[in-house]
Image 1 (cartoon, rainbow, N blue to C red):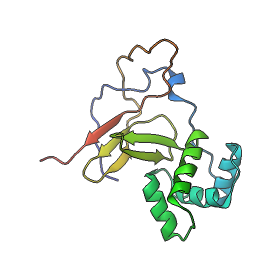
Image 2 (image 1 turned 135 degrees about the horizontal axis):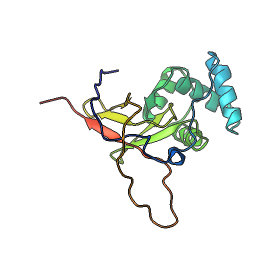
Image 3 (image 1 turned 90 degrees about the horizontal axis):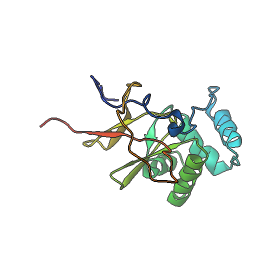
Image 4 (image 1 turned 90 degrees about the vertical axis):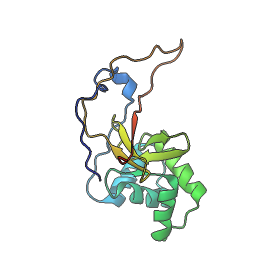
Amino acid sequence: MPDVDINEQTLNDDAIDPAAHGTGHQPALTGCPWHDVNEMLQAAGLRPTRQRMALGWLLFGKGARHLTAEMLYEEATLAKVPVSLATVYNTLNQLTDAGLLRQVSVDGTKTYFDTNVTAHHHFYLENNHELVDIPDPHLVLNRMPDVPEGYEIARVDMVVRLRKKR
């Protein structure tokens, strides 16, 4: 992970209504990825099928990370997990809907799935196409926009795009 230095920032989750963060929380892990994935799936109301278990093991067995469906499919293929790209997408979407993953879109063309579902923001490293957590938990958002009638803020995703200096 690249070293990223954050000095005085103007965006902070503390200024946002806590309800706007959603209810994301990190699952309690025991150290046995297979057992942990089984428990996570069942706690989220998902049946622990072989494919979900295998993909969950690949996703959650290596700690907090950011993956695209294609990256997970490639890992599954290398691990000899017999799964289609469509199944990978379906599983990622099911895990996201269940609150076990957080979806982060970059440019509207690339979607990452984050195993860290707590409220946090990201740097997007344009040169490597890599998503990195912003380590500062005290970013301040000075003012939220007015929300149209009948809507509420579900969560705020900030993606700060970085590139190498020229």
